[in-house]
Length: 437
Image (cartoon, rainbow, N blue to C red; front, side):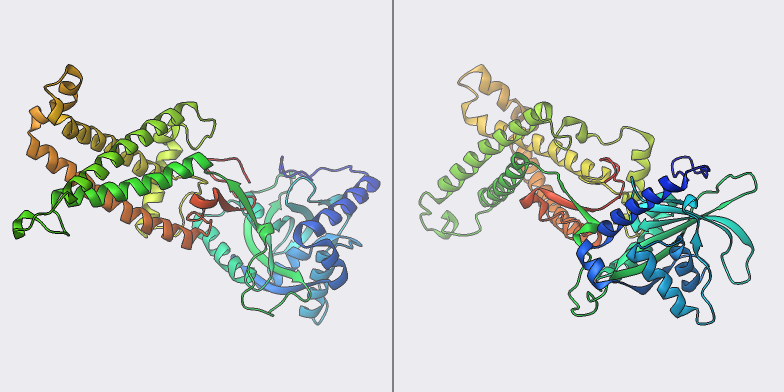
């Protein structure tokens, strides 16, 4: 049987099937649990979660379908669990080896069982069952986003008790051998014996997640240097606009050179910020990092990007339970950052124009830089300069809130990624801005 074509393949020799099955048993044993632990301690089944109209017992029956004589610890544990739950005789879930396509090049297996009933009184049908890594099975069944969210939340709860979740999806085979689209049924919880409720601090194993290096060291340096410069420019700029500490002429006291010091710090930080901006522009054209290239400034390249933008907005407005998956920035985030880059460029130009004001009569270069003061007037230039500063404050507050919110909901380590450079993504997930993990 092939998962690529969705049709059953007949004529596989028994010998080759047995070899494939033995290899699959070995691979899946390593995939789901440490090999030595599975051998020495065995596997226990701890319930599961049904997301369709079938009972948990029927879900367990589907998950337990496996080749005759399989020694896979997971298969053995599932069959033993059936004997416990069906006290008046467990249903036969063993199938010929040729009806089983093991998880060799993917993270789920395919099994075909004839005359299977979804419910106790339901119609018997030829059924194909996909069983394995929950994310991989969900990608096969393609459930709605709301159902994905529900499955992941329940899987997290199971993972906190040391369980791994075996996803189960089914498809029916008609008289012509055509296979229907897969339907998500739920998942079954399994874990090595002895890893149970010893501590409430247990979390899903790292095998469920993949760490991706996203932000390079140069980008992280620019990010934190940017933070330092924006804070410095904001504090000194606000002081220049409205001195909020120290002595002033309004109190009849000589303030000394405090304002001069503030202006010096402000101007120095301003030129450093210009250098950071120039470096970011250069990097956008020469970097080999896909997340630093200039193409990311405009994330709308196809129709799906606009759909994802709409869904992301709904997620941030609490109208949707899940947003499209991105490794780096989703379209809404990227547009916000692009907008702040443009706003920052205007702030730099206004700052340079105000700085050039005392020197505009010296040569043509300073006259060109100071020209906007003649167009709008110095008071208006200073007012716009101050308003953009307040807009930056609003962006920073929103940025911090949304970063913490995303981390708490998506659990991908986005905040720490600006220190470590890496984010965590669920294995076998399909982000829109990266290949399948």
